Image (spheres, rainbow over the protein chains, first blue to last red):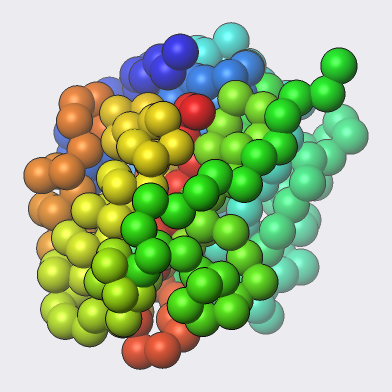
Length: 129
Length: 132
């Protein structure tokens, strides 16, 4: 059974705002697979470019909203892929990460990649439903 | 009780990475309820020869091959839960998006797109997880 998790707030629907042909998240087999999250205003969908730290904070806030609307939470993350624009910011990511992911942290991979629209960070996660 | 782990047979010789290229990987592996598909680049499904073209044409070829692989494993594009797309250039993301909309039925899977350095001059690589 595959079930689409709809955006709990209009700004979190990247398809609506940017035409991305993707669902915000899919629940299947007891897991929730989220689309890559970028820093957008959860109400308006407006892009919120900033420092890696500020972008990561916005993303974690949005991820919390999305997961909780699906009956999960940041405590139930299983796997995190963190894409950053430059590995020099690795420690900056870790500082924000620690604030939001506290309890038995998930398996994580961080790597450097080009991110859409010039963002500095993107999070791609799987959580237990 | 342990859930099954099964390497799925490739439907066509060109889609068998080990046969053509002796790569130590399987294209589709079932684990529990899921199928995990290896990162696909554009190849001819019959011969395994690589196909290089525009980002759009490569994406089209990859998704056609993905459909073959999934259907041979008893799944289909409408059972895909997550797709990861790696692009040589993020400037091509809108073109890839267009091809996606023509392939995946509603509602689309979750997806992440990022720019990365790809092997063999490929412009696109796509990996996915689907329900078996």
